[in-house]
Amino acid sequence: MDVLRESNWVLSVGTFLPLVGVIVMLFIPKADEQLHKLVALVTALATLGVGFFTLTQFDFDQAGKLQFFAETEWIKVISSNYTIGLDGMSLPLYFLSMVVTVLVMVYSWNHIPSPGNAKAFLILMLILQTGMAGTFVAQDLILFFVFFELVLLPMYFMIGVWGGEDRQYASLKFFLYTMFGSALMLVGFIALFYQVRGALPEGVEPSFSIPQLAEYGGLIGRSAQIWIFGGMFIGFAVKVPMFPFHTWLPDAHTQAPTQGSVILAAILLKLGTYGFVRIAIPILPEAAKEWAPWIGLLAVIG
Image 1 (spheres, helix red, strand yellow):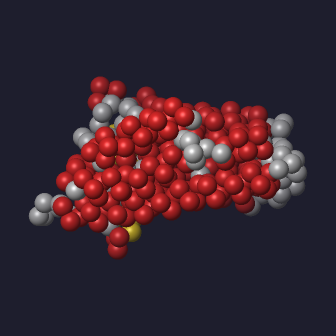
Image 2 (cartoon, helix red, strand yellow; image 1 turned 90 degrees about the vertical axis):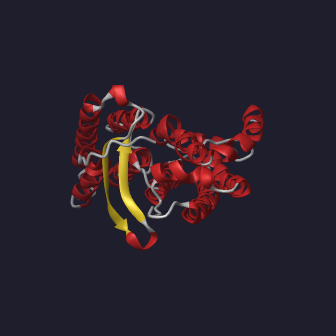
Protein backbone atom coordinates (compact mmCIF):
# COMPACT_ATOMS: atom_id res chain seq x y z
CA MET A 1 0.00 0.00 0.00
CA ASP A 2 1.34 3.46 -0.93
CA VAL A 3 1.59 5.86 1.97
CA LEU A 4 1.98 9.61 1.92
CA ARG A 5 4.00 10.04 5.10
CA GLU A 6 2.84 13.48 6.12
CA SER A 7 2.17 14.04 9.80
CA ASN A 8 -1.22 15.65 10.27
CA TRP A 9 -3.44 16.61 13.17
CA VAL A 10 -6.79 16.70 11.41
CA LEU A 11 -7.76 13.01 11.76
CA SER A 12 -6.96 12.95 15.47
CA VAL A 13 -9.13 16.03 16.02
CA GLY A 14 -11.96 14.54 13.98
CA THR A 15 -11.75 11.31 15.95
CA PHE A 16 -11.38 12.59 19.50
CA LEU A 17 -13.32 15.87 19.40
CA PRO A 18 -16.52 14.05 20.49
CA LEU A 19 -14.73 13.06 23.70
CA VAL A 20 -14.19 16.75 24.46
CA GLY A 21 -17.95 17.11 24.36
CA VAL A 22 -18.24 14.11 26.68
CA ILE A 23 -15.88 15.73 29.20
CA VAL A 24 -17.87 18.98 29.13
CA MET A 25 -21.14 17.11 29.63
CA LEU A 26 -19.77 15.26 32.64
CA PHE A 27 -19.65 18.58 34.51
CA ILE A 28 -23.18 19.62 33.57
CA PRO A 29 -25.97 18.63 35.99
CA LYS A 30 -28.13 15.76 34.79
CA ALA A 31 -31.30 17.84 35.14
CA ASP A 32 -30.15 20.45 32.60
CA GLU A 33 -31.24 18.40 29.58
CA GLN A 34 -31.42 21.30 27.13
CA LEU A 35 -27.79 22.21 27.77
CA HIS A 36 -26.75 18.58 27.30
CA LYS A 37 -28.57 18.49 23.97
CA LEU A 38 -26.94 21.75 22.90
CA VAL A 39 -23.42 20.61 23.82
CA ALA A 40 -23.91 17.25 22.08
CA LEU A 41 -25.28 18.87 18.91
CA VAL A 42 -22.57 21.55 18.78
CA THR A 43 -19.91 18.88 19.30
CA ALA A 44 -21.34 16.75 16.50
CA LEU A 45 -21.52 19.79 14.19
CA ALA A 46 -17.94 20.80 15.03
CA THR A 47 -16.80 17.25 14.31
CA LEU A 48 -18.65 17.34 10.99
CA GLY A 49 -16.87 20.61 10.24
CA VAL A 50 -13.52 18.89 10.75
CA GLY A 51 -14.73 16.09 8.51
CA PHE A 52 -15.76 18.55 5.81
CA PHE A 53 -12.33 20.20 6.00
CA THR A 54 -10.76 16.77 5.58
CA LEU A 55 -12.98 16.11 2.57
CA THR A 56 -12.00 19.38 0.89
CA GLN A 57 -8.28 18.84 1.52
CA PHE A 58 -8.25 15.23 0.31
CA ASP A 59 -6.30 14.67 -2.92
CA PHE A 60 -8.68 12.55 -4.98
CA ASP A 61 -6.02 12.11 -7.67
CA GLN A 62 -4.10 10.05 -5.11
CA ALA A 63 -7.08 8.29 -3.54
CA GLY A 64 -5.21 5.00 -3.46
CA LYS A 65 -2.64 6.38 -1.03
CA LEU A 66 -2.99 7.05 2.67
CA GLN A 67 -3.37 10.77 3.33
CA PHE A 68 -3.35 12.87 6.51
CA PHE A 69 -0.99 10.15 7.73
CA ALA A 70 0.30 10.36 11.29
CA GLU A 71 2.29 7.86 13.33
CA THR A 72 3.68 7.96 16.83
CA GLU A 73 4.84 5.37 19.35
CA TRP A 74 1.99 3.98 21.43
CA ILE A 75 2.48 0.56 23.07
CA LYS A 76 6.16 -0.12 22.48
CA VAL A 77 6.24 -3.44 24.32
CA ILE A 78 3.96 -5.05 21.72
CA SER A 79 5.22 -3.03 18.72
CA SER A 80 1.91 -1.21 18.33
CA ASN A 81 1.87 2.42 17.19
CA TYR A 82 -0.77 5.11 16.99
CA THR A 83 -0.97 5.05 13.19
CA ILE A 84 -3.81 6.76 11.34
CA GLY A 85 -4.58 7.73 7.76
CA LEU A 86 -7.35 7.96 5.17
CA ASP A 87 -7.61 6.79 1.59
CA GLY A 88 -10.37 6.74 -0.98
CA MET A 89 -11.99 3.69 0.59
CA SER A 90 -12.18 4.91 4.18
CA LEU A 91 -12.90 8.61 3.53
CA PRO A 92 -16.61 8.19 2.54
CA LEU A 93 -17.32 6.00 5.57
CA TYR A 94 -15.44 8.35 7.90
CA PHE A 95 -17.43 11.33 6.65
CA LEU A 96 -20.71 9.38 6.63
CA SER A 97 -20.29 8.52 10.33
CA MET A 98 -20.13 12.25 11.10
CA VAL A 99 -23.17 13.12 8.98
CA VAL A 100 -25.26 10.36 10.56
CA THR A 101 -24.23 11.43 14.06
CA VAL A 102 -25.39 15.00 13.39
CA LEU A 103 -28.73 13.76 12.05
CA VAL A 104 -29.22 11.53 15.07
CA MET A 105 -28.39 14.42 17.43
CA VAL A 106 -30.94 16.64 15.69
CA TYR A 107 -33.58 13.92 16.01
CA SER A 108 -32.69 13.43 19.68
CA TRP A 109 -33.47 17.07 20.49
CA ASN A 110 -37.14 16.18 20.94
CA HIS A 111 -36.89 12.38 21.09
CA ILE A 112 -34.91 11.08 24.04
CA PRO A 113 -36.24 7.52 24.45
CA SER A 114 -37.70 6.20 27.70
CA PRO A 115 -36.55 6.13 30.50
CA GLY A 116 -35.00 9.51 29.66
CA ASN A 117 -31.61 10.63 31.03
CA ALA A 118 -30.44 12.73 28.08
CA LYS A 119 -27.00 13.15 29.65
CA ALA A 120 -26.11 9.45 29.60
CA PHE A 121 -27.77 8.79 26.25
CA LEU A 122 -26.01 11.62 24.41
CA ILE A 123 -22.66 10.83 26.01
CA LEU A 124 -22.93 7.28 24.69
CA MET A 125 -23.66 8.58 21.20
CA LEU A 126 -20.56 10.79 21.26
CA ILE A 127 -18.41 7.88 22.43
CA LEU A 128 -19.93 5.83 19.63
CA GLN A 129 -18.90 8.57 17.18
CA THR A 130 -15.27 8.33 18.32
CA GLY A 131 -15.33 4.55 17.94
CA MET A 132 -16.77 4.72 14.42
CA ALA A 133 -14.39 7.42 13.18
CA GLY A 134 -11.39 5.75 14.81
CA THR A 135 -12.15 2.44 13.14
CA PHE A 136 -12.05 4.05 9.70
CA VAL A 137 -8.77 5.93 10.26
CA ALA A 138 -6.81 3.29 12.21
CA GLN A 139 -3.81 1.85 10.35
CA ASP A 140 -2.56 -0.36 13.18
CA LEU A 141 -4.28 -3.65 14.03
CA ILE A 142 -4.33 -3.08 17.80
CA LEU A 143 -5.58 0.48 17.37
CA PHE A 144 -8.20 -0.80 14.93
CA PHE A 145 -9.29 -3.43 17.45
CA VAL A 146 -9.62 -0.85 20.25
CA PHE A 147 -11.83 1.42 18.15
CA PHE A 148 -13.73 -1.55 16.70
CA GLU A 149 -14.62 -2.68 20.22
CA LEU A 150 -15.27 0.84 21.50
CA VAL A 151 -18.39 0.76 19.34
CA LEU A 152 -19.68 -2.30 21.19
CA LEU A 153 -20.25 -0.91 24.69
CA PRO A 154 -22.28 2.23 23.83
CA MET A 155 -24.54 0.22 21.54
CA TYR A 156 -24.96 -2.47 24.21
CA PHE A 157 -26.15 0.11 26.74
CA MET A 158 -28.31 1.96 24.23
CA ILE A 159 -30.18 -1.26 23.49
CA GLY A 160 -30.17 -2.59 27.06
CA VAL A 161 -31.33 0.62 28.77
CA TRP A 162 -33.32 2.56 26.15
CA GLY A 163 -34.58 -0.34 24.02
CA GLY A 164 -37.93 -2.09 23.72
CA GLU A 165 -39.61 -4.67 25.93
CA ASP A 166 -37.09 -7.42 25.14
CA ARG A 167 -34.11 -5.07 25.36
CA GLN A 168 -32.16 -7.12 27.90
CA TYR A 169 -32.30 -10.27 25.78
CA ALA A 170 -31.42 -8.36 22.60
CA SER A 171 -28.52 -6.46 24.18
CA LEU A 172 -27.05 -9.58 25.79
CA LYS A 173 -27.30 -11.51 22.52
CA PHE A 174 -25.64 -8.63 20.66
CA PHE A 175 -22.87 -8.47 23.25
CA LEU A 176 -22.15 -12.21 23.32
CA TYR A 177 -22.10 -12.60 19.54
CA THR A 178 -19.80 -9.65 18.98
CA MET A 179 -17.48 -10.54 21.86
CA PHE A 180 -17.12 -14.10 20.54
CA GLY A 181 -16.24 -12.79 17.10
CA SER A 182 -13.89 -10.19 18.52
CA ALA A 183 -11.99 -12.75 20.55
CA LEU A 184 -11.30 -14.84 17.46
CA MET A 185 -10.40 -11.73 15.48
CA LEU A 186 -7.87 -10.67 18.12
CA VAL A 187 -6.31 -14.13 18.15
CA GLY A 188 -6.05 -13.87 14.38
CA PHE A 189 -4.35 -10.46 14.63
CA ILE A 190 -1.78 -11.74 17.12
CA ALA A 191 -1.10 -14.89 15.10
CA LEU A 192 -0.70 -12.76 11.98
CA PHE A 193 1.83 -10.52 13.71
CA TYR A 194 4.00 -13.43 14.82
CA GLN A 195 3.79 -15.19 11.48
CA VAL A 196 4.78 -12.04 9.56
CA ARG A 197 7.54 -11.25 12.05
CA GLY A 198 9.16 -14.58 11.29
CA ALA A 199 9.07 -13.88 7.55
CA LEU A 200 10.31 -10.27 7.53
CA PRO A 201 13.51 -9.43 5.66
CA GLU A 202 16.51 -8.60 7.81
CA GLY A 203 16.46 -5.04 9.10
CA VAL A 204 12.67 -4.59 8.96
CA GLU A 205 11.17 -3.95 12.39
CA PRO A 206 7.96 -5.94 13.07
CA SER A 207 4.81 -4.02 13.95
CA PHE A 208 1.04 -4.21 13.81
CA SER A 209 1.06 -1.62 11.00
CA ILE A 210 -1.61 -2.51 8.44
CA PRO A 211 0.43 -1.15 5.49
CA GLN A 212 3.47 -3.18 6.57
CA LEU A 213 1.42 -6.34 7.09
CA ALA A 214 -0.20 -5.87 3.68
CA GLU A 215 3.27 -5.62 2.14
CA TYR A 216 4.70 -8.73 3.79
CA GLY A 217 1.60 -10.82 4.61
CA GLY A 218 1.99 -12.80 1.40
CA LEU A 219 5.24 -14.27 2.77
CA ILE A 220 3.29 -16.34 5.30
CA GLY A 221 2.79 -20.02 4.53
CA ARG A 222 -0.45 -20.98 2.82
CA SER A 223 -1.85 -23.11 5.67
CA ALA A 224 -1.11 -20.42 8.26
CA GLN A 225 -2.83 -17.84 6.08
CA ILE A 226 -5.95 -20.00 5.83
CA TRP A 227 -6.25 -20.50 9.60
CA ILE A 228 -5.56 -16.86 10.44
CA PHE A 229 -8.04 -15.69 7.83
CA GLY A 230 -10.63 -18.01 9.41
CA GLY A 231 -10.35 -16.23 12.75
CA MET A 232 -10.65 -12.84 11.11
CA PHE A 233 -13.52 -14.06 8.95
CA ILE A 234 -15.66 -15.00 11.94
CA GLY A 235 -14.90 -11.72 13.71
CA PHE A 236 -15.87 -9.62 10.72
CA ALA A 237 -18.75 -11.89 9.65
CA VAL A 238 -20.47 -11.35 13.00
CA LYS A 239 -20.42 -7.59 12.41
CA VAL A 240 -21.64 -7.76 8.76
CA PRO A 241 -23.56 -9.97 9.78
CA MET A 242 -23.33 -13.08 7.61
CA PHE A 243 -25.12 -16.42 7.95
CA PRO A 244 -24.92 -18.21 10.39
CA PHE A 245 -23.74 -15.34 12.64
CA HIS A 246 -26.65 -13.04 11.84
CA THR A 247 -29.34 -13.95 14.35
CA TRP A 248 -28.47 -11.11 16.74
CA LEU A 249 -29.41 -8.48 14.15
CA PRO A 250 -33.25 -8.78 14.04
CA ASP A 251 -33.43 -8.56 17.83
CA ALA A 252 -31.00 -5.65 18.01
CA HIS A 253 -32.75 -3.69 15.27
CA THR A 254 -36.25 -4.14 16.62
CA GLN A 255 -35.34 -3.50 20.26
CA ALA A 256 -32.88 -0.63 19.80
CA PRO A 257 -34.12 2.95 20.13
CA THR A 258 -34.55 4.77 16.83
CA GLN A 259 -31.17 6.48 17.14
CA GLY A 260 -29.38 3.20 17.79
CA SER A 261 -31.17 1.47 14.94
CA VAL A 262 -30.18 4.25 12.51
CA ILE A 263 -26.51 4.12 13.52
CA LEU A 264 -26.58 0.34 13.41
CA ALA A 265 -27.94 0.26 9.86
CA ALA A 266 -26.00 3.22 8.48
CA ILE A 267 -22.55 2.60 9.96
CA LEU A 268 -22.07 -0.37 12.28
CA LEU A 269 -23.08 -3.03 9.77
CA LYS A 270 -20.45 -1.66 7.40
CA LEU A 271 -17.61 -2.18 9.89
CA GLY A 272 -17.40 -5.91 9.19
CA THR A 273 -17.25 -5.50 5.42
CA TYR A 274 -14.71 -2.71 5.84
CA GLY A 275 -12.56 -5.03 7.96
CA PHE A 276 -12.61 -7.65 5.20
CA VAL A 277 -11.57 -5.16 2.53
CA ARG A 278 -9.10 -3.17 4.63
CA ILE A 279 -7.38 -5.97 6.53
CA ALA A 280 -8.21 -9.60 5.76
CA ILE A 281 -8.13 -9.62 1.94
CA PRO A 282 -5.08 -7.40 1.23
CA ILE A 283 -2.94 -8.94 3.98
CA LEU A 284 -3.85 -12.58 3.31
CA PRO A 285 -4.60 -12.75 -0.43
CA GLU A 286 -3.98 -16.48 -0.86
CA ALA A 287 -6.27 -17.35 2.03
CA ALA A 288 -8.90 -14.99 0.64
CA LYS A 289 -8.89 -16.97 -2.61
CA GLU A 290 -9.30 -20.24 -0.71
CA TRP A 291 -12.13 -18.90 1.42
CA ALA A 292 -13.90 -17.03 -1.41
CA PRO A 293 -16.25 -19.87 -2.51
CA TRP A 294 -17.35 -20.53 1.07
CA ILE A 295 -17.86 -16.84 1.79
CA GLY A 296 -19.88 -16.55 -1.41
CA LEU A 297 -22.00 -19.55 -0.42
CA LEU A 298 -22.75 -18.13 3.04
CA ALA A 299 -23.56 -14.76 1.48
CA VAL A 300 -26.05 -16.37 -0.90
CA ILE A 301 -27.69 -18.36 1.91
CA GLY A 302 -27.93 -15.24 4.06
